[in-house]
Each structure stands twice: as C-alpha cells, then as structure tokens.
Image (cartoon, rainbow, N blue to C red):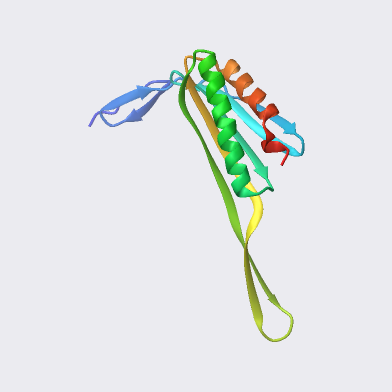
Length: 148
C-alpha cells in the first residue's frame, strides 16, 4: 500500500486529505462566577468555537438554558448568512461515593456530584471565526445560564 504524505495533510493508506489547521485563539472569560474557556479556530472550510466550563447548578435547568443558548447562537449565525454545521454540548456529572465507618460497620453513601462539566462546540460555514466568536460571546453574555 502506498502512503501519501506532505505537510498540511493527514497520512492514510492509499489516500490523504488535507485539513486547514490555523492558529487557535484561546480566551478565558468570567461571567458572574463562571470561568469559560473559548477556543476559536478554522478547520477545513469551517469556523469552530469550542467552549468549556464548570457549573454547580440544577442539571435539568442547565439543559433547558443550554438549548436556548444554542438556538440564539444558531439564529445569529444565520442572520450573518452563515451556515450551521453543528452545535453540540456534553454535560458530565460524576458520581460521588462515600464510605464511612463510625463504629464497626462501614457504610456506603452514593450521590451525584453537584458539579457539571460542560464541553460545547459551535461549527459554522461561510462565517469568519472572529465573527463567530463574537456571536458566541454575545450569546453567553445575555444568557441566563450563568445567573442561575
């Protein structure tokens, strides 16, 4: 099998495809008591904003507000004549297990951690990454997600 390789491409057996990986701009922002890390970059023909933050909130309410945030971002992308590629998030909660002994028997208690780790990505076409970053930042600033 032939391996084709040159700078700016990924190597695969019998074929290759290029990705335009441009410099990634990382921004940390505080909204109320929440620190949000945003990364803006371009991949292939898309502008990408990745976000990450921790919340100590009600998971159901966070989900509802996250969906509304995504709708607002999508609306603003299309108003700028951009095309929505994908807007997604994962909300991770860890289980906390406590083992304690006060006499002779060990006891176990389980609960979900109140902390939620949120990873999100906004991928759009036909829009500059800086414009997309401004859209996302504006939506974050006006979202009730960070005031609950």
